[in-house]
Length: 140
Image (cartoon, rainbow, N blue to C red):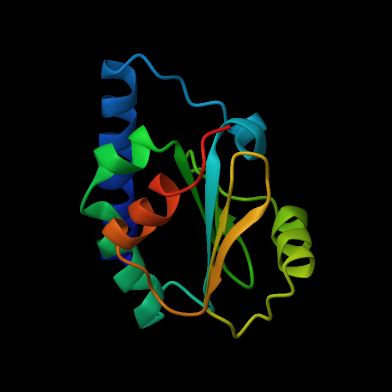
C-alpha cells in the first residue's frame, strides 16, 4: 500500500511541476467544466486493475496535462481528489450513487469537459487509447 501512495505522490508532483512550467493552474473546484475528469472506482487500493491503471496513466503525464485530464480515485470508503487530497465521504457516496457503482466494482468513467460521460468501462485502458478517444472528439 505504501508503494501505491509513493507512486501517486510522485505522479502528482510531476503533474504539478509540468503544469506550473506550462503556465497552467489547477482549478479542481470547477473540474467538471474546465477539465475532463477520469474517475477510477476500485474496491480497494490493492485491487490489481486499479494498480495497473495507475501505472498505465503514469506513462505520459504530459499527455494527461495537455488534454486537461483530472483524475479522481474512488474507493468504497474514501477517495483521492485530483489534487491528492482526501475525498469527502459524502462526495464518495454521491459519485457511487450517481454512476451506479457498487463497492465491489472496478470502473473507469471519463467525463468530457461539459460533464457528459465519454467512456464507461470495467477494465483498464492504456494512456494511448484514452488519448485517442479524447483526440477524436469534435472540437467545441
